[in-house]
Amino acid sequence: MSRFPYAGLLAFMTLLPGMAACSHAPFQRQPKTTVAPSNAKAVELTKSPFKPEQSAEVPVDVLSAQKSLAELGYYVGKADGLIGPATRAAVESFQKDQGLSPDGKLSLSLLRLLAERVAQLPKSTTVTAKAGDIIIYGDGTVDNSANERAVQWDSDTDRSVVALRPSTQGWPQAARAGLDWAVSHALDNHNATSFQWSSTGVSQRFEIHVLPGLSPGETKLAGAASCRRFDLREMDSSTRYPGLACKDTKGWYFPHSSIRIARPATALHISSPKTADVR
Image 1 (cartoon, one colour):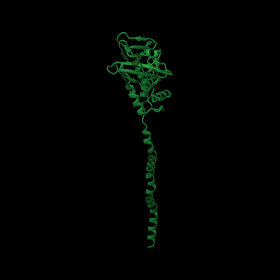
Image 2 (tube, one colour):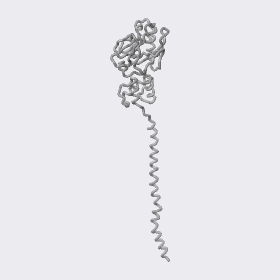
Image 3 (spheres, helix red, strand yellow):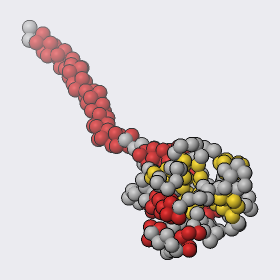
Image 4 (cartoon, helix red, strand yellow):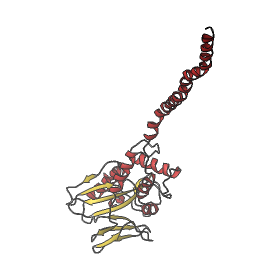
């Protein structure tokens, strides 16, 4: 009878390795199924805070900015969509003229401002000169229009028009000087929208607009650094008188000519022969 317990013990010991293998197998596989996913999540959590910062960067349409700057006369380089020294210099010049901090950086607000200034540019390059109006050309000649005729503005010819001035024949000398003073004042304060001018001595009333920049053709024609484009617009008609004016130490003048625009200091001395000649 003592054999049976011994035989049972042998059988139990024979099965024990298999039972041990079955009971420990789940604990060996468990780390393989849980550790890898938890590590992957930890990596994702580490990277995720940087994604919003990258997506928050707003791209700026550099090509459109360059085209707008070129239309306004600030950019003379190739419109390639790349921000280089020429683009930054053009942006800085535009910012200075607009009374902004000249950091040379493009932004969405600056793009909107550029679009607004381009929209303000005259759409037509043909203006009408009335009889008696004065046409100043880029070759230094001055023509007193005998009849009403069309004049091409911003043309690339040997006799490009520098300015078209309204006839002041029959005007009091003080009114002539007063209109020049108003133009000079508007050029000095070009950031303002417009200035209105009228005189008790004449029936015409004008609105003076100084444009934000020069077109490439106007820049070439002016040939000087401190030049501006302005428009005299009759308030009682659709007639307008465009002009280019450049500034030196003596004040504003029409480029390629000896005609100067009266300054406030000289406008009061109406007996001065030089002031009387200014039209």
